[in-house]
Amino acid sequence: MTRLNAFSLPALAGSACLLASLFSTTALAGLLEKGRTGGLTAGIANEQPYAYIGTDGQVTGANVEILKAVLAPLGISKVDTPITDFGSLVPGLAAKRFDLIGAGLFINPQRCKVIGYSNPVTRSGGAFIVKAGNPLNLHSLKDVAQNGKARLATQPGSNQVQEAKASGIDTAQVVLFDKDTEALAALEADRVDVVYFPDAEVISLLKKASSPAVERALPFEQIPDAQGKPTWNYHAYGLPKNDPAFIQAFNAELAKLRASGELLKILQKYGYTENELPPADITAEQRCAL
Image (cartoon, rainbow, N blue to C red):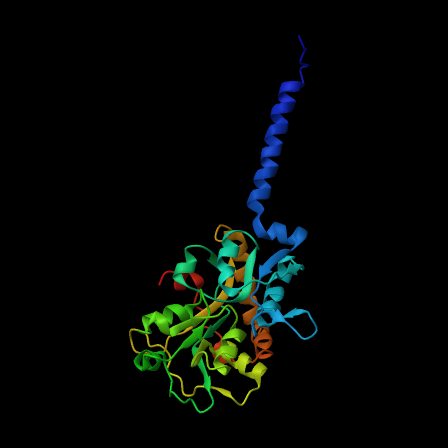
């Protein structure tokens, strides 16, 4: 019979407890610990002005710069930015293919069931791009619905799809493209009649296209709320739903960045104005509860 020395059982028990404690600590540490030791991955959709590949081949954009400014005080300096289609961002975060979403993402109650959010970074209204002269006289989603045959281009998985449906636009009129640049190309090729995206994205698209064949539809009537006032959407970072320590730390640094004025300075580099800053008391929790 093999003899156990007096140290064996207590030592094994102690080692088991120590290992369990270490594994538990690692599991609970979340993105703060992971980011400090090995960096994080932030999924992006390669869209201006949020997060995109610049002419020098480097990832840039308002969301990228703000993300780095938020994470640096937390001791996180390395952020990789894998590119995916916009519609794959939320499923990708939920499946842990990346650690957070670094693209422009509206806070949406349906998405809130699957992922967490930072507090809002910017607010945005909608905007149309049409052919020069706006031949169908489209200035609102209501106009598209009443026309009945106008074809509206936007992105799968976006708030714009839901807004089009809520405004009475038939699903047969909505044409979906994975990239905003593809939607604009479809307009230029007469395959759609109007492109619908957030205003900041529309500004960047038109600037990049620099084409006399298309223009922003002005004026544009925003979707009204129950009181008849224009509604706003709120951009934020998509974060893991089950990591409250990271979300709290992230929001604290985001608030400091705004209070210092640095947030607005970064945004202004990409065509935003103070009008695009959300009220400071608007939170992700509030928007998710709508």
